[in-house]
Length: 169
Image 1 (cartoon, rainbow, N blue to C red):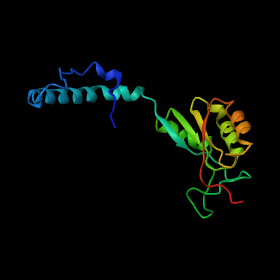
Image 2 (cartoon, rainbow, N blue to C red; image 1 turned 135 degrees about the vertical axis):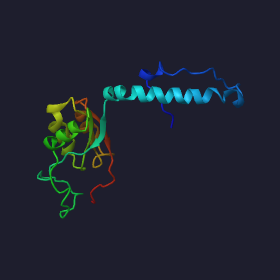
Image 3 (cartoon, one colour; image 1 turned 120 degrees about the vertical axis):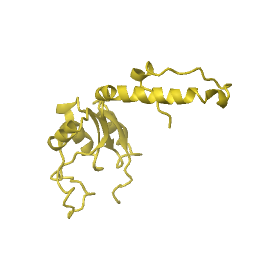
Image 4 (tube, rainbow, N blue to C red; image 1 turned 90 degrees about the vertical axis):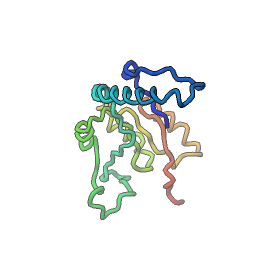
């Protein structure tokens, strides 16, 4: 995977004149200079660049085990996960770790949870930037389109997933 040099750093690197026609032997002196220049530039500039770079957590689950639908995938005897995890629990952790934005991913497949996720994060839209719901139970049915259109009225509803854990009929 190629990494793009951030624009903030591009002015630091004295790129030599390299072309596809330049023989490797001609580049033996140029390549080490380029590597050292790039490394020095990254060391000097990365701290300030990192301070400005947003940190987006793109997969967070919020859930309330006391809700009627509950969260069925957490085992009853799981002493770590068997508790509610709500914005009041999550936000201090996000802040302490420099997270500036979150994409919430629905923890279960109950249809009302799509709207519930939008509702419980509405008071902090600057942190909760997007919600990925779960429409597994209505994909391919006449109920899908109206529900999806209703959810999309909130611009933070950015997509849905099909969990593969549909209820048995």
